[in-house]
Structure formats: C-alpha cells, structure tokens
Image (cartoon, rainbow, N blue to C red; front, top):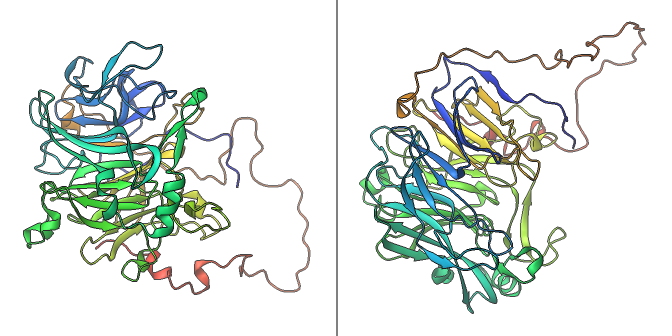
Length: 490
C-alpha cells in the first residue's frame, strides 16, 4: 500500500478549545531535541542532545544523552544520561555503570542507558497534577544493558535488560536483571526452544558475531500512587516497577522489595483470561496512568502490531521467532485487575475502513501514548513521525508531522511528551492560533490541475450503485468485535 511522496510537515491541525495546550518535546532526527508550541513553531532546540527519550522537567531542564556507542560494538547503548538547563549546560550526569574499551575508541565509562528512565517525584515522566519530578535532587530510575550468559535461556551471549536506581551522586541503590527471572516470564516449551536456539541475535556490523536481544525492554516506570494499592492490592505498590518487552510481547510488574514478577500480561494471549484483549504485539510505553489524570490506575500502552514473540512456527515465522504478526496498531487502556479494555483507539476509531485501511494507523516499532489532564491522549505514531492528540471520543484535535529526517532517511520519532507552558519559564506563553483542517479532496500542490473535468458524458445505469461487500470482510459485516472498537471513555 503506497503513500504519497509529497505531504505537509509541521502542524497540520489544531483546535485550541478542545486540545490540552502546552509545549511538546521530541527528538528531531539527528538535529537534537526540539521543543514546539501548538502551532508547530520550534521555540527551542538543544542541538546535539540525544533524546532516547527526551523529557522536560519543570524549570526548562531537559534530560537526554550526549553520545551513543558505535553499533559495531553495541546496540542502543547511550554513553550517559544527562540533565541540561535551558542554555544547554550539564547540571547532572550519570555514566558509571560499565567501563568499556571498544577498539579504536578511547576507554569510557558508560551508562548503557536505553529507551527509558524516570526522575523521582513523577512515576512516568509526563505531567500529572501534584507529581512533579525533582530537578536538583532525588533518585533516577534507568533502563540499561548488560552482556552476559545464562544457560537456562541460551548458550549464546545475551544482551540483558537491567533496571537500576541511582541517587543524585550516581551511586546504584537498587538493581534488577531480567535474566534472573526467566522462569517467571510464562514462556511455554516451544518458546523456550526457540529462544535457546536463537535469542533474537543482533549482529555487530562487519565484526561478525552478535548478541541475543532476547527481551528488548523498551519502557520502565514506577507504578505510582493508585487506587488498586489503596484498596489493598500489594501488586500495585507505588514503588514497584512496570516494564514491557517488545520482542516477547510481555508487560509485567516487578516487586521493588523482592525483585519477583508479581503481575504479568503476555506472552500468550490465547489464554481464556486474556483472549478478549487479542494479541498485544511488539508493544511500547506500557505504564500506569498517574493519579490525578482521567483513567488513573489503568494500564496505557501503544500496542504496535508488527512482529514479536517466540513459539510454534507458522507460515510467516518458519523458525518460531517473531511468530505473532499484525499490520496495524492500537492504543489500549486496560484495567489491570479485571483485564477489561476500558478504552481504545484503533483504525476504526480513527474513521478508517477496517481492515482495508487499518494500516493507516500503524507504527511497527517505537511510539507512545500520554494521558492528558483533560482526558485527551497524546499519541506518537513513531515510525512515520506523526504526533497527534485525540479526545476521549476519538476526535482529532491536534496533529504534527516531524520535518526532520535521520541518516536512514526516516522522520521517525521515538516518543513525544506534552508539558504545561509554565514548565519552561524562560519562554513567554505563545499565542494559540487555530489550524483548520484542509479539504484534501481539493488540496493541490502548485502546478497541479484542480478537481473536476472539462468534459462529462452520462452512461445509463441498469441498477443504482450501492456500497456493498468488499473483497475482504469489514467490521460493517457483523464482526463481533465491532462493539469493542467504538468504545469511548466516560
């Protein structure tokens, strides 16, 4: 299915009366971290900073990294995690997880940070009333890498995911390693056999060899204060850690005190208790909606689709690796106790014909979703650099397409975050100007002919044209899931 090679970038739609307006931060290709207003104006750029992801703290501070390891030797290893002020001065740094000597490079201490981190005071890294991240003290939760062997998983070298908590001085005060909890992850025998033979081996450039990126955890946050813990459910202790693994289709909660996995969704979505959810595949940014926001306590996740998981072979996965596939994405809000879907956004809610145009909401990797104080949701459809905001009733009220490309010629955006204007006091609050939607049936680039013909003839019809069945069944043809794709949050 093709896409136009000519399309607008920047802000394309904005309804000030319905959007939750503020600044939005994201990684702009290879340029650095950019801060935009609701009209898409670039109000500040931290040039050269790597946002994996970039997060704003109150006071105009931003978190990111100053370098990334050569992919000949490692996968997505950031040298450090730094906090810089509005002027770009580094005011905090962590880079002391592992000392690395890569051939041809000066020996360096690395954080090996990747994909996520949280600063004490806010569990998830985005704005929630009364949960402000600390800016000059406090602990930082960091998702990191460690190379190791574990014969229970595979005889190949593994790229393991670790989660560490460091204090303001950079001392590790808590650490958790995923490989030590293999038996708690729910893999069946078929999946274990696949993992042992090939734990998702990623090669290192021209050097040969590689490492098994067996889980590929891409988010880690605190559970945070929530109603389920208040009601006595210890699994949802605010200090516990919720994380998700893209390659295994797993979302889980780790008990901070014991290290045990106390709650898990996946990797098998054929089980009776989760079959109604359908398969969550290759997901990103799974987190608990913070207290004070609509939907608080529920799980919010960008269910990418694409490919992920281990298990029995099938025609699309002859060796049982990445054996679950889907060609469209979903945003799911799930009650973590009842496991019922409370709200969702799919191609159907977007107004597309399903399944014909389901691919029009699809990012097979990266991406995120943020719950906003007015009940809207900010969505990063990452692989095509589209950021947009929708209401609880699925109305599109803001849209922005990144104009920045990277060295792979993509305009991908890993994540974006919306923060209040007053979190960046160095800037005057911008004027908000509505951007009316364009009638795409009439929109033309310069030099193109307008819609309509100079010559028309009529041909007599035998029967009127009635929109009917397509070559594939659609949700209009009595699909039992139709009711599940139209729900809106109360």
